[in-house]
Image (cartoon, rainbow, N blue to C red; front, side):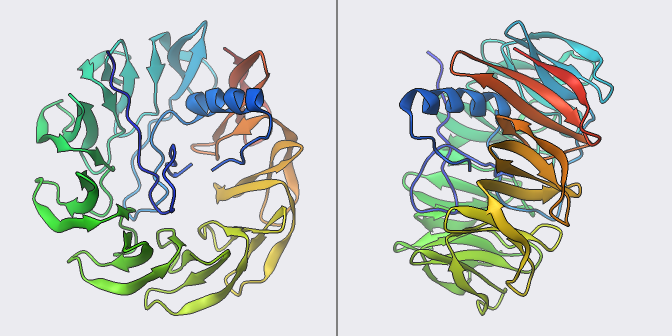
Length: 363
């Protein structure tokens, strides 16, 4: 029986799926139950990896190959939309440092030629980060190197990808941090934990979020109801029902006033007032007025926004790709993954920066 990973939702009070990533890929729930299930299915295809919401200093090296599904099997295309690795896998995630998690029964890793570099053997497999990948085996998490050898044996109840040479791990009900040798650097003591970014990590202690440094010292006292990792010198935090931003000293730079907010990327942060999303600058003023149903962070000069459907805007707020998609991922390597469909099916495709389909939606 396959053991499925239930990732901890770092950075927020309730636990649910994902983010990430990056994710931290957080899409609005739909009211109709049937549609909820449909969107969950789409999200499982659009966001197969645990998205790290933290922005890390070390950016993974991603190959310009993109997972696609044809007839229910997963393969990979290049930026021209040509099939490079034939559809053969039960599931597949993105390439990082020349290896992509692929599923053939259990999870393993394929290289850019499509050959299995690490044989399928894991219950779950994450993408490589800083030379190691978190994997699950026998209900526990450990870390392997690019040869498929365990560097840190499975022993944790949950584990994040490494960020700034530190990995958040869970033992029992508590989170701590290890280094790349598996040595515990910060003892498990937190109710939840995010990833390190800009030398600090958000942690939850006694029901509130604060920030610790790499020695485990609390540098911003737990006081927030929710907190995101630092990005561009600021961290989004929630006090009560309102979001604002603090600096690395814990000083409030942008007063809590938004109903929801995301991290700064390219000096802009998505923020919601009432039911509408816009983008603020570092003074807290809206650079792009609230007008969208939903919004993602900027990536490669564009941000995905929802206005009936998902499309993409530039930093002036003008649409560069008109709303037309049911779900999207941010641009990466000049391509954005999207889903289109209805209650009875969904199709996955890719669009280029010019708005032209590189891979026509199919399933």
